[in-house]
Amino acid sequence: DAMVIQNPRYQVTQFGKPVTLSCSQTLNHNVMYWYQQKSSQAPKLLFHYYDKDFNNEADTPDNFQSRRPNTSFCFLDIRSPGLGDAAMYLCATSREGGNPYEQYFGPGTRLTVT
Amino acid sequence: KNEVEQSPQNLTAQEGEFITINCSYSVGISALHWLQQHPGGGIVSLFMLSSGKKKHGRLIATINIQEKHSSLHITASHPRDSAVYICAVQTGGGADGLTFGKGTHLIIQP
Image 1 (cartoon, chains in turn red, orange):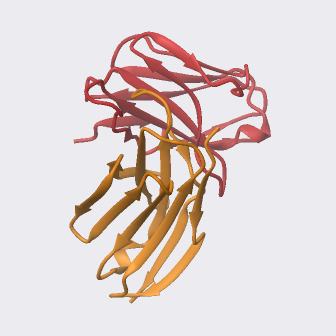
Image 2 (cartoon, each protein chain N blue to C red):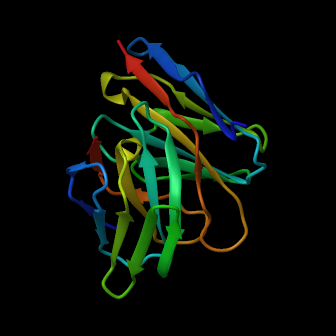
Image 3 (cartoon, each protein chain N blue to C red):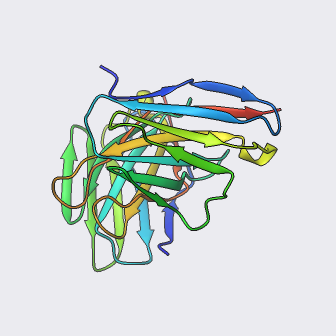
């Protein structure tokens, strides 16, 4: 029944070693979002895809990249993780139909950088 | 940029009490979301509203657009309601991402 799936749920990577987080959805939603939530802080939008159009937030570091090969999948790539990138990464989806769009969240991937 | 403020930051109450969590924002919005986050990270959408009031079970959400303020109420609170409750707003178009408040950590004691 899971609608927004994130893999893995927990990821440990080394300082500077590239890491990829995965999000998939069974809802056929055309919009997918990546949020970063650091400990005891509010989630912060990194970027989102509207169909194939990539929308980057102005203050998202270049170290963070994203790919969306098809409607169902979206990846978050961290090219050279630093200790400050340790956080919970949340994927969310929404679809067209009315304004605004309700967002559906995945369970998150908790990233640890050693 | 929209600033989203929630109060209180932490709330501990006894089972059965009526709970109110408040949210205010600084810039006109297209929608306000109330979300619930349990330990471990998963976020569940409780309400999305742009005017008036919505009710789902023991949860009630209201919004006053003129005052830029929303409240989330929980009636007959139960320990399973213990979670972080987050207010988030959308300022622009339908596909825009959310701007989140810092959340209210609610503990309901038996």
